Length: 168
Image 1: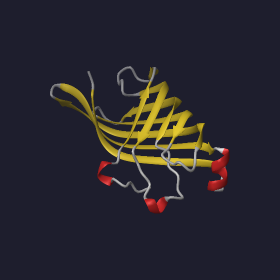
Image 2: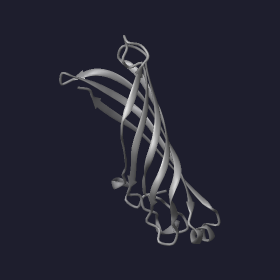
Image 3: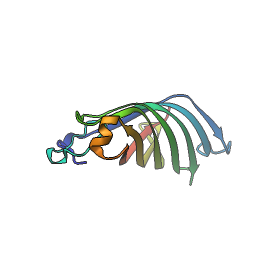
Image 4: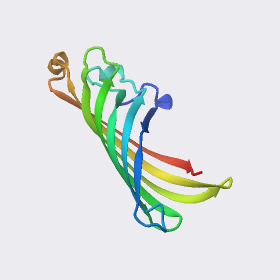
């Protein structure tokens, strides 16, 4: 949906938790498979236009996810990382006063990055181009099912961004 404040629209997520990495080649540490159990938090400040009054938007998700991540070096400096998270949503909310979803639901998160390793200020740094996509599904509560004329809600978010990761 369009944001009423396009220049200040933001979305952020936080994934925190333990990870276990299997190194598939001891000579290249970037060649690995990682399993993660994460606490997941996602928030945005998107608003619906007045003309979109019949639409619904969730701008807060909280839950837990299991994740698998694969890192593949292409050359000594260039590589690819991809991950898939399966999410159990425990809390979801949005700004709508007329429609609500159940707090629990399911979701997924896909993340891919192509990166280039370099030294920046004498620290190994990974400069990358990333794609992120998250989809979440929740059931509408009983009163909202009648208003929406359907039983569930699915919201998809996508982002393409540049990133830098400093390694210590």
